[in-house]
Length: 408
Image (cartoon, rainbow, N blue to C red):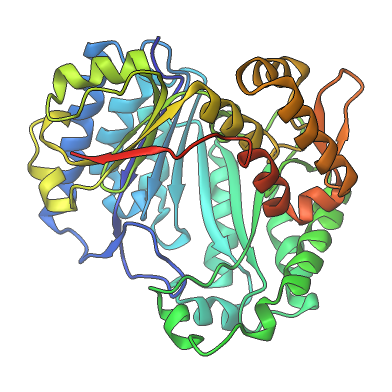
């Protein structure tokens, strides 16, 4: 037992982006709440380690929000608390405006191995429309300095956004590739209701974000990144050989992970959930037949900062049976370019029944969404990549019953 991955969430930003519906808040620089929050997160990482929850942990991810907005000293302390539990890989999210030289030095000194920079675009007008506070030159400088510092550098780009054209999208791709980075994640803009963009376009779906535009931009990204030597290994992520994000893969391959921080999600096996309950007795006992527990921290940032440990936090929970977990693993595995192996399919057949699983596989193949691998596994086709939600739905529909939910 023990999770294989650790996620810590920092909910602070310089300002709120127009598209963001994450657990994050605009916070003034130097606000003491940020230091108190980071100290609390570090205590909980230590607590989880002493309980044995992190004994199998290999990777970590410090996300947000904007972790680099914490500043060098506070950020370095939190990364140092995580590093001993993340021997294979430790990624920190960054925004270009706060990835300063002293922050880079702090990351290296504390044990971070990767930095993921939220660039989104290298066009000034597009950045302004998204509510980003950095400019194109600042973004490219941040990428180049991260590479020069010796970190593995990833970059996030967003397509199908206001003011974007085919030409400006290709320019953004070329710009970030010129910095020598080894990993790029590409996301179509999702316009969520409770965001500035959601309110702006509440009357209808804008043409710039149409599904065919999203698909065309994703295909353009695949061509440009592939030509530069980055291969797609996940629905939205591309990497040079040996530069894929191990923590990213953990999410799609059923690796249990612990989430710490406001809004952070985790996934525990039943045994590790029982261990967590010893520190958080307010959590309900898992129902009989529970195979997997998904948890989301619902405590606000101030409550989290003031908490003595994980037992003081509030959570939303989902309890999955073995059958529901098997269907979820098939669904998540379809996000990977290589799909799922024969072993996972065999487990699903035992858990869900061979007839049901084989019927779902046949449907996915009949719809042109998936294809059989030479080793007997199942991989998404190009159509399945572009129409992922249809493929994921076929797999999740195998899950029997309703997932039990609770709050504590």
